[in-house]
Each structure stands twice: as structure tokens, then as C-alpha cells.
Length: 83
Image (cartoon, rainbow, N blue to C red; front, side, top):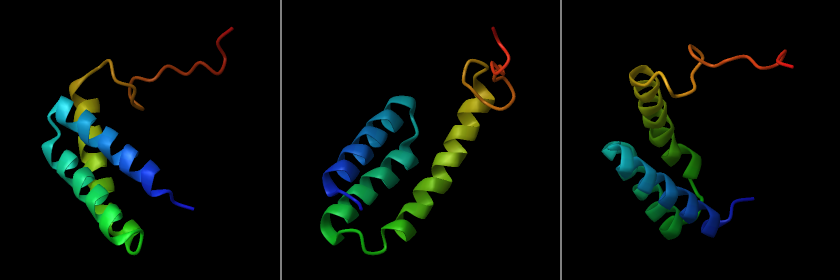
């Protein structure tokens, strides 16, 4: 079950974080999704969220490629066997 207040809070947080790191397109998509959820409810929400998911993956990949400090499959330490 989706809760409109939770969705609004989530997309607001995402938008703010995106603006902080300069991911303008992702911020716009998050904002648009929040407006749509508030106006139309959740009809077609998953389809409307698809462009956001795609852009999120592009931003994530760009961040991982540009910073050796961010966790990624390339530089994550496997701690399963650490004592």
C-alpha cells in the first residue's frame, strides 16, 4: 500500500539530494513524480517512475566512476569473512 505523505517526503529528499550533487535532470524527474502523485494519486505511478529509475542508474554509474570512495562492485571490500 502506498502512502502519499511517504511518497512526497521521499521524492522531496531525493530532489534535494540531487540538487546538492548537481544531478539536475534526476531532481526534475523526482519533483515531477511528486507533483503527479499528489495530483493523480497512484494510477500509472510505476510507469511514471520508470524514467526516474533509468536516470537514477545513470547518475549512480557516473558517481561510481568518478569517485573511488563511493561503494561499488569495483571497490567494495567483502567483509563476510572478517573476524
